[in-house]
Length: 369
Image 1: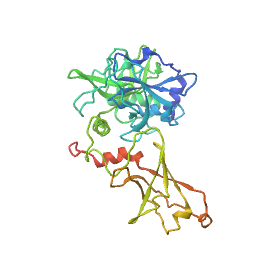
Image 2: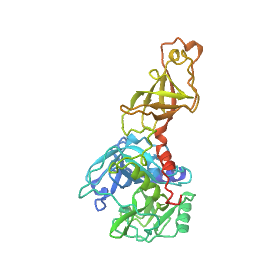
Image 3: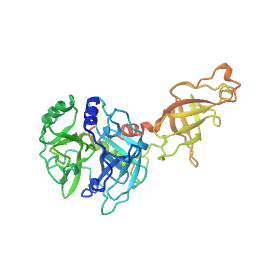
Image 4: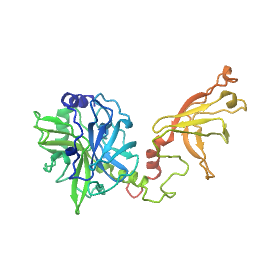
């Protein structure tokens, strides 16, 4: 990964936002824009709109040129008609491999629905093994079409460029060592099938004599991740009525960009600890902050253990939802028994693992997985 990013850094030029770059010929083409990068908002990567709430792009687009993960608050999604959305969550079928570029694919959950119009619309997701990656189109090519190469050629070229190979490789065109790199990561690779366009891959890099003349594109083929992608989109689709087969009733999930606090219980053996004395602060994608008072926590002989779930009860519900799990015993020293100051500990945020939990619980037997 470092060699890949260093190679990009050596040739990278900041690209300011320009309406001509938005790919208005492709209604599903979007830009990831870095909003905190000097001298102005700058182009980070491209992406593809899958529905009103999700965008697909390359996972390495969420990292800077030093290999550090970017905070989601630093990026916005810019659509062809000027709409913009924030990113509140990311989903990956497999962890992105920083060293070998494996699994360079990520789904981005937007903070609110996109409004479709004559300039903005989603692309189709093909069923696995129904659409062949031939006659591939992409906004990077400005209307041109490049021949799809075999996987061995793609891997050989990647090894020449980065000294590494990665799985699910797809590449288009003729690779030339002397050509320049052009920042076009995240763009979708599209195939026309049955009178509609389908997403079959994600561009990772492109080379050519100039930005207007791209002759080679390397990317990742999405065939292996299509079933997973459909499941994620279905689970978070507001157009599908929620039912017991689509939500896990005992887990807690709230899509909000703002932090909030609530009173919780800790389930330990067959009873609950400190109903009104333990507070938890929630922030998206961060560990839970558990606040407690030793004088109350131990005065009634209450104890905790690693693995104890943190639960909360919503208004109007008769059952508790799991919001987190203790990964250590809440600690209190003898000198703190009479203290009026609260203590704070971290706990595992269950919501961070919901995509994985949902995937395990709802894994389709029909897909053969």
